[in-house]
Amino acid sequence: MAYPATFEVATTDALTGLLTAPYYRHLLREQAIPQARASGDPLALLMLDIDDFAGVNDRAGSGAGDAVLKGVGDLLRSTLPEHALLARYSGDEFAAAMPDTRLDDAFTLAEELRRRVAAFAVPDQPELRITCSIGLAAYPASGASDVEVVRAADQALYVAKTTGRNKVALPLTDSRMVTKTSHYTQVQLDRLAQLARSLGRNEASLLREALDDLLKKYNDRLGGPPTT
Image (cartoon, rainbow, N blue to C red; front, side, top):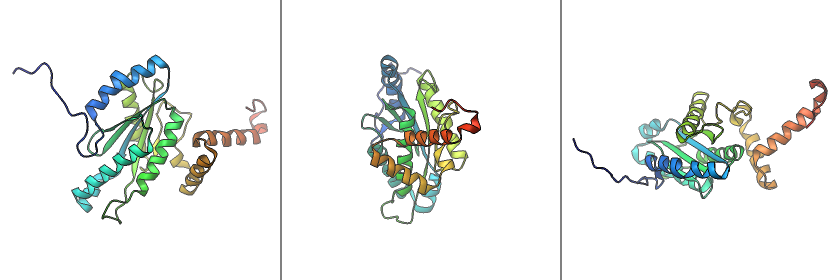
């Protein structure tokens, strides 16, 4: 069978208006990663999966499912940086590539996105609530190619899904960092977000400041210096 030398594919998803997965992977491979490599600027990747999306369709119908997908797409646009590449990666999975975004800043954005998804009210379905799980990765720390970085984000997403859902997980290779949603109450996270906004800082830097204070307080238990 003869195949055409070239063919056209859709660049945007008809339902959400986000990039399609093939075009997202093309832009990541041909633009985002080469630009980050050349400039040395950070690049963070995010993979998001709606928790129990099949149950949404079963309980409320496909119309409600479409409304959820559109809503999550809108939340990605309103929460993540304007220059981010946003895609509907598969049925109920979404992806984002965020140039000039460090991993800790991506974590703060992902936490805000997770909270907004949990608060999302499905039109005409006020009793229907959803949550999402999110995995993060960073170029080049999580991989030297688009395939490796996407795989790292997908592995982090798998950790979020299998350890309770409705949380953000960091790359498996970054053992220095922990998942906030596994260790803090919702009230603590909400107040942390409020404090970060009021100070114009990101949540990760505030957590590091608190950890530094804790280590200084118990420095004698650690045998003295260093204290910074």
